[in-house]
Length: 445
Ligand code: HEM
Image 1 (tube, rainbow, N blue to C red):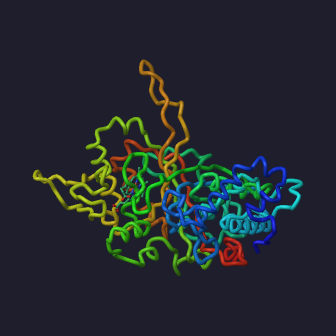
Image 2: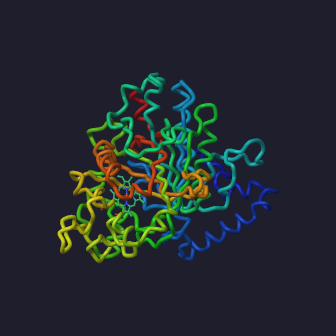
């Protein structure tokens, strides 16, 4: 299926490129450097994993969900432009093949030996190592029905869990930057690898789909045993049902529920066959008012989050992994973790046990020149930066919606955050060799 070509590897691209090799010489040297560090067992990526490492593409489940978080992401949502089922199937087939190749460190498609004509790969990943690239595909509601039109005879197969997300208190969603019929999330330890992957997949959509919105993100180079910090300066991901397991293990903390991911993340027999082993992705672009946050007292910030800033410990605790004590009160009888603290409202104990797997990235899109102030105050500029919130769950109705409904009204963090983009996507089960992503859906259609 991956149609190997002697010039299909990224290093082969350089060899094939002849005259081009001079221009790409720096990349070639970099590839050699990476290879040699791998041979010596020296890791070159921030999370202690060599950039030469790959993540599997084929399997029972798609990558990029339980995969230990990579340092960079590029997320894109697409509108499908065709009404022709065979076009969509051809696109998903081409996407599958290209994603599998790129995850293995190859070019998106086989290159012709003489590099004549438009190439099957734009070339900017040539000489770069795979950097643990994962590509995760999702299907939005519009793939099933669009404006009442059952374009692909899939309407009856739309899972109940793939609902239209309700509006939440405080939402300021920009429609043109929300939703989408198809989603692609590339994650890698190298930003150029993540962007390259989505760029190649976007090239394959020509005449069939077009990009609706996209968002890049980063997660800092913390050591594997440390929880990354978000732009608010707090550790983010401490209380996560699965992702913290390596952290717990490295600190000798026992993992309470080893099968938690089945309960929280993966669709089981309650879902259609094509969704089993899949999950539901909620993505929200959440702008953080960094200027406002940075002028706020640290003690107040800690009250807002419900955790200490430096250690990440819950208020009233000492260690990052201490359990939240939601019943603890001070000498005056006030709760130590305030009633409106983010972690109190988000905790499973406050939501009838509801949990989600968060896999968020920070984003930074420069400045916004629209400041909501009026003379005589100075018109200002603000960072357009925040959190690309990414959460996976078995069912959004009992996951994100259940948890966020109340948070959107009561969370003290809402003073500093605004949700400006949103999407819900059904992420089908993994792809077996010889299949294309979502094939079992189209077979049933
Ligand atoms: C800019 C937006 C957000 C920021 C900066 C943020 C930050 C944080 C931080 C610092 C923590 C504590 C550390 C941890 O356990 O990971 C946390 C926990 C959590 N957050 Fe958020 N968060 C944001 C949005 C959201 C949203 C929209 C949800 C929606 C459901 C959410 C759900 C959770 C959950 C479930 C926890 C774990 C609570 C627990 O069980 O202790 N967060 N978040």
